[in-house]
Image 1 (cartoon, rainbow, N blue to C red):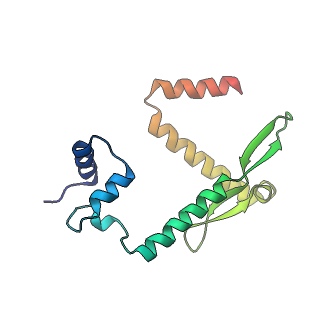
Image 2: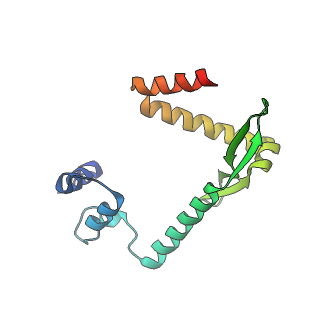
Image 3: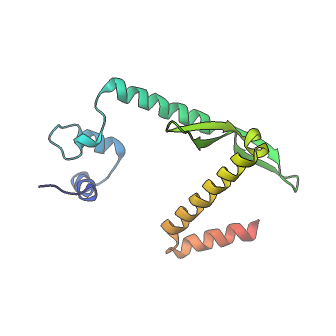
Length: 139
């Protein structure tokens, strides 16, 4: 009997009283588990993917501080992600993004997409609206 992903995850939650990525991997390790095929079990392949994830985290952790139009210090990522033609992402320095009209347009389009995604995810919550209104009032 085939069940959907939500049902599988709910089953793990019900069985353990919690749901974590590590627990899902542990449960899915069994060849017979319905989620088994959703994971890469070849350690050479998975190990390389993990190192790339670690590299991504390193790249995203670096910040640069600049002064905005009001002279206030602002901290942003030193490198911004852009979809690469060959797949995945490439990262460009913040200074280059600020000076390159096309990269700036792409980054702004990404910001708008992210904002709309966040709004769609939380717009039904009054607390979310209050957070946004509070941030706008503070600005």
